[in-house]
Image 1: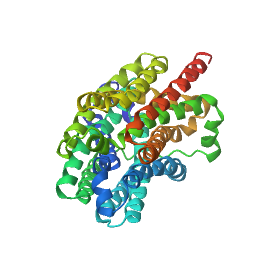
Image 2: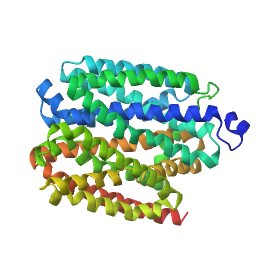
Image 3: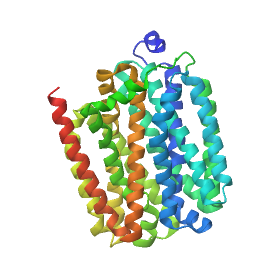
Image 4: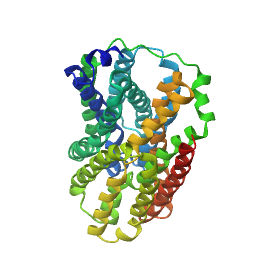
Length: 398
């Protein structure tokens, strides 16, 4: 905390390097989590499993983040951020190497679960470090930048990993993410402040946050919105190749374009958060629902379907800054000592949504067909809108 006070409001070189390291961290963890999305067909073929079973490698990762992050956060939050971050980055690297060496589905799933828990904790620490080391007036900007790492992962990491996996085998994609982890480890070792102490908070105080209805609503809105997208996005490769009949060689390019639109989504998220985000998001989620439901009609033709998918990317992250800050603000009101735990709730919510979306998408693609994933996502987005309307009403009466 002293660093922020000693430098006033200007960006120091130390702060810039730290922000870069945190953005790199979310880029690396995001790439590791989602790189398999572009390689589902290759993994399914090589391990002789179904596409929906391969999709479970996405939902399983996300579910492990959702379940493991708050538990591990409670257990280790009393330790300094520096040693925690570096320890879990080593676990992350080991998990990716194990994934690369996996020749069976259970081993790959196990490696993904271990990697996921490490990712969830490191993402939580990244948000906490940003909060502790940056001036109050810049926290929103820094949170937005740290989240941009996930978006950059969609734009660069996932398409690059997909290309590497298609060219050299899916295992090579995990060697790629392991190497990224080593680079991130070095950057964190250099830039992370060593004087950030852990925070001791009882389990009762942390779980007690969920006795407040605004907190419960704020937790589930991101989960519903991201689930709406991931019903479709988890199966984007088979949708492109089997529904739109676009040749596999164009998959990486389309994922790159999708990621570019999601960068715009992240930039818009900062603007939405700055202008009464809760009020705006009530209607933004309705628009997201329309975009997703439209896929049922547009996926019959390559060009309209492709354009519609880009708009799905444009809507994917519009909620992120508003609800990350809202969760932390609510924790500040109800239980200030549980702020680290509150910082973990946003990635937990998002990954719970990814797991649910991937799972629902798997059921729909298996039993009804990929064409129906869009309208299912639309229903989830409408649910997010409904909860946001309720959250805004509660916020106004505070």
